[in-house]
Amino acid sequence: MRINRRTLPEDTDPSFRFRYIDISAVDSLGKIKVPKKDTLFAEAPSRARRIAPPGSVVVSTVRTYLRAIATVPPTHEPLVFSTGFAVLEAMPQIDNRFLGYYCQAQPFVSEVVARSTGVSYPAINPGEIGNLPIHLPALDVQRRIADFLDAETARIDKLVATLQRELDLLVERRVAGVAAAVSGSTHTDRRSSTLAWLESVPTAWQEVRLGLLARMGSGHTPSRSHPEWWTDCSIPWITTGEVKQVRDDRVEDLYETREKISELGLVHSAAELHPRGTVFLCRTASAGYSGVMGLDMATSQDFVTWTCGPRLLPHFLLWCLRAMRPDLLGRLAMGSTHKTIYVPDLQMLRIPLPPTDEQEKIVHTVRRQNARIDTLTDRVRRQQELLRERRQALITAAVTGQFDVSTASIRNITDGVNA
Image (cartoon, rainbow, N blue to C red; front, side):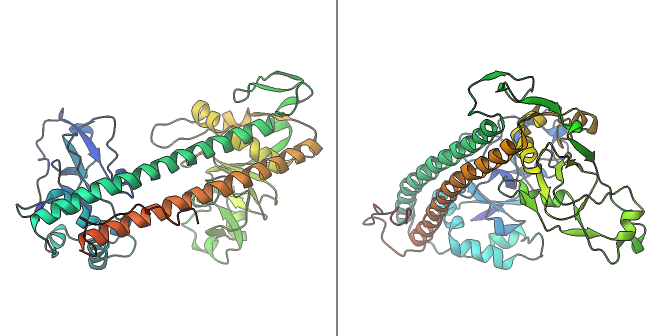
């Protein structure tokens, strides 16, 4: 194989259009998700330079542990890749499909990862990839192996796609279940809702501005130019780094934070110490995600908080915020790259308000419904993982000659998936 080092020249016509591929567009099955929109050279990211012809194999040279390796599809041109990829092309004695599978096999991947250097972003020089040895069978054998793997990986990929549709439906069911619960779907006596994110609510319920039910607060970052404010830090401090804990809506209460601030930093900044049970909502980079403080905590300025009064339970408010997330992001969030929800809009939020005893029942209903769906979701994800593992093992075994593909059968490829 050889390394194709062709890149777009600096003097490329600014109106030249192409589809730009970065590492996020290569999935775990070695498929490239081609963007639907063209990119103008004049507006291209600085790393959009590497040209990969159809049939070539792209191998990520950064964050190599992600195994971003794929064969460029023949139906899309031109594709321009980030310079974080090496572009491999088959020599006359190598079938290009076989080369694609060989690069996805475990021995090749392990060798690339082993030769990578760096801790946070391990990387390898493209030239070093080009020098890796390839153990080749005869060309006709390569083609038989590629034919076999084309058929069998397509079968596995179809199963994985079917499971993904199941996951998508489970997500939809979960979201719909939360919205139905907080809107009192069990009540038959209903009226039209004045809330943008609900069609109707029980006639007996109120729709109340959140500021009348809970004290709204915010946060701040103590100045880093005062090192003494960042010593003896003991106060849990919620930043956007904590959003990953609540992103899938499984975690309700947050107890651990990556960073803490000190009493001195709290005093010398606009940060507040919020009591346990305060509800927080991220309004910037990861806008719309929410949780409940499991301890007394402070937050950065990226969050707003609500400390509930006697008429509102924190966890009922939490599930209202999660149910209205699509509306918050679609109607209130501003910005194209990084969405931001501004405080004045959040000050005007309104929610449905049942009696507190009914709020408690609704929270229990949501948890019970979600627990069932989450169990099913975990099972389906595990099935996907097993299929991906089998796909990887099959490719590795085939290209390394562990079995004769002309007599092989994997009718039992899904055996044990449901175990």
